Each structure stands twice: as structure tokens, then as C-alpha cells.
Amino acid sequence: MAAKLITQEIGSFRKPEYLSKKFHSIEGTQEYVDLSQKATVETLEVFDRAGLDNIGVGGEMFRWEMYEHLAKRVTNIEFYGLVRSFDNRYYKKGSVIGVPERKESFHREELEHVMKDTNKSIKVPITGAYTMMDWSFNEHYRSRRELAMKFADLIHQEIEDLQKTWKKSGRREQLQIQIDEPATTTHPSEMDIVVESMNRSMEKFRDIEFTLHVCYSKDYRILYDVVPDMGFHGYNLEYANRDSLIVRKEEREGYDDLKYFKTVNDTLKEKRFIGLGVTDVHIDTVESQELIENRINYALGILEDPSLVRINPDCGLRTRSREIGYEKLLNMVRATRNVEKDM
Image 1 (cartoon, rainbow, N blue to C red):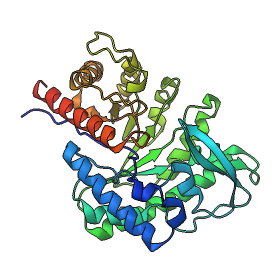
Image 2 (cartoon, rainbow, N blue to C red):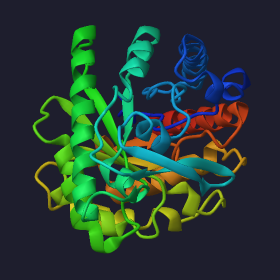
Image 3 (cartoon, helix red, strand yellow):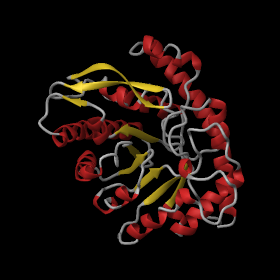
């Protein structure tokens, strides 16, 4: 029997217009819940048609933006205005003016609805403590480290809530938590804060699979260097965006730094897996199955052990249309299944 490469969704997906146009005006109401759940069901159907093994939380229909969603549910964060994140996307940047505490769970309601609507594997993304610190103004704490550690405590509390919700549901498979940390390598001198805040968020949990998602980095080697120090089981990362669209290449520049990851990983008793980004979420070009197969095979040639590889888009697909997003996922899954035949 051929080896199995898990295909996974690791982020957001474009919302239907009936939700996106009304989101801000209805957030917090029953209509928001009803339309978010409706959009989740429809997105899960898209993921099922594409053939995904792991459907995340259905494209994050209950969230508008990764920073703002969490910050709005925390006390003592005051919003000053919009800042640009990427493309033509903006979020409300907050300033910490006192000790932040959770006003409510960030994602429990979302998880409860997704569990009702699918029996497939679920992965819950949570914006990480270091990114929350880095993307906030700090008007209360003496240092960036102190603020990061406080956010880590809030993330830990959230994971406790999600774990209780998961166990209460009777699900037998392992709960999967993905910590989203786009700011991870933006300040190389602060990697000690990155490591400490991430480990603090995850400490004492024994029956959860933890993955780290970093969407875009100038140099992933900064991250690979601290892999032995962090408690993650795997890393869902971006590679396609930095790679060529030429279909057949003996050397794929977008994936070359996996050689460095393997060198680090080979020193570990418990190996970490890589969630391999094989389709670029910032272009409308739908990469061919042949191109994606070439990318996967090149990465497998480096990493050697297929059990340490999962297949995903670089990041969430919310910047693309739902149609383009589906086509990218479909080709990704079909390419993965073709690669499996020759493994």
C-alpha cells in the first residue's frame, strides 16, 4: 500500500459575499452566528470536493482578521486605527493600556460549530503570543518580553478551553492546535522571546498536536535554528511563493532551505514534520498538477521520510476568489495523490 501524504488546509478562505459585506455590522449578533455557520458549511463542502484530508476550521468564517479577532476579545486593548497587513488588506491595530485579560473565548464557538458540521480532521489556528505582542503598541509593560508572556498566558487559557470543548464532544482523535506566528523571524535578536512565549503557550498539554505556522520569512534558517528548543510537533510553512513557476526543474530554489531543516531535524530524537507549502496564495495562477508534483518530489528527495511531510497551501487563501481557491486545492490534492502512487 502506498504511503499517505496528508493534505491540509492551514488558514483562511474567502468569505461568501453575503457574509463579508455584513460582517462588521452584524458581528456579535445571532445573524453573525447564523451566517458564519452557513458559510462554514459551504466552505467545508468546497474542501470536501477538493479532497482535503484536514479541513482546519472551515476557512475561518467566524473571523475577520487574525490579530483583530483576538484583540477585540481582550480587555485593556484600545484601537487607534487601521494599518495595512498585506495586499489591500487592513486590520485595526491595538494598544495595550493595562493588563489584558480574556473577555470571552476566542474560538470555542467556532470549534463547536465546525465539529457539528464535519467528521474530518480539524486543526484550530490561534494567533500566537509573539505576533500579538509585536503587532500591538505597548503602553503598559516595561518590555516586549513581559507583554509577550502575558499574551502567552491568554493563549494557554484559550487552549485549555478548546481542549475541554473537544473532550466534551466525544471526539476520539487528537485535538490539533496551530499557532499562527507570522512575526516569528522579523526580529532575529528576539528569538529567545519567540521560543519562551511559544513554549509557555503550550506547556503542560500532553494530548494535543501542536504545529507552528509562519507565513513568509526572509530566512527560515533563523526558525530552524530554534526548532530543537520548541515543543511543536510540526511546522506548516510557505515555500511556493519563493519558488519558480517553471514546471520541471532539477533544483527548486523555493525549497532549498529544507536541506538546512533536515540537518537540524536529524539531530533530534523526536523528528518534526513539515507542512509543505506547494501553492502560492498571493497569485491567481492555478499551478498545474505537474508543477506541484515536481515541488513535492523535490522536497521528498531532501527530507527522505514521507511520514515527515504534509501538503498544504502556503497560507490561507482568503486573498483569492473562492473559485480560484478551490482550483488550487483541487490540483494540490490530485498532485499529492499522484506522487503517492510512485512512493
